[in-house]
Structure formats: C-alpha cells, structure tokens
Length: 116
Image 1: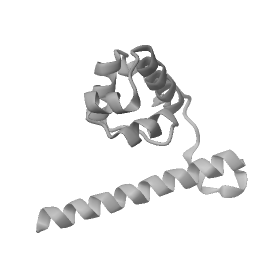
Image 2: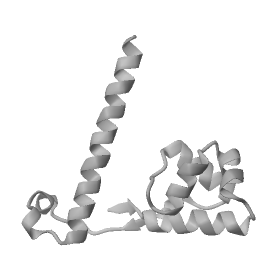
Image 3: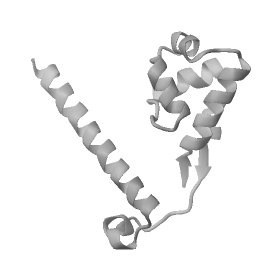
Image 4: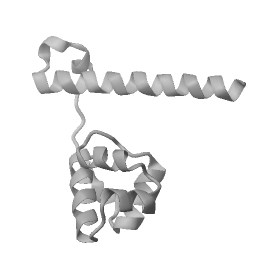
C-alpha cells in the first residue's frame, strides 16, 4: 500500500521552491495557497488538499506520485492498545485523533452554513 510521505513532500516543496528562486509569498501567489500553509507544508505540519497538491506540483514541476512511498500493512488494532505503542507512535495516534476531530468540526460547520 502506498502512503503519502509528508517528509518527502516537505523536502520537495522547499527544495523546488528555492531552486526556482521563489519565496513562500511568491509561491503562495502562484498556487493560491496561503503563505502560512506553505510554511507548514515545508515543516510537515500541514497536508494540502488534492487541489492544493496539484497546484504545488504544477508550479514546482514535480510528480505527485513521487510523494507516495510503499508501506507494508500494519495491524491497526495496535493503535487502540496504548500500552503497546512507543512514545512516537502515541504522539502519532494523538495527532491523528486531533486531525479527525478537526475534520469533524469542519464538516459540522459546513453543514450548518449550507442549511442556512
């Protein structure tokens, strides 16, 4: 199974941006992605949407598929048994749950505004 490598994406965006002599602000203007979000992508703190991902790939000239790495399947049940997780894995699970809660909040807000 292939999974997005945020580390590879972060490095690619930063290196390609610098190779083209672009600031984060200039890249922001070319892609329509907020400059702060570009900085977060480069620090592995934000995963772009599909349209943002495409905009970055088009402007910086890289293949989206190159950002995915082959990962072997793991037992997802382990994620629920915190005593078997390392500290790094616990941080990852916490981060995942926070992202899921944030996504849920966004969905609820969209529904609220769509119904008004």
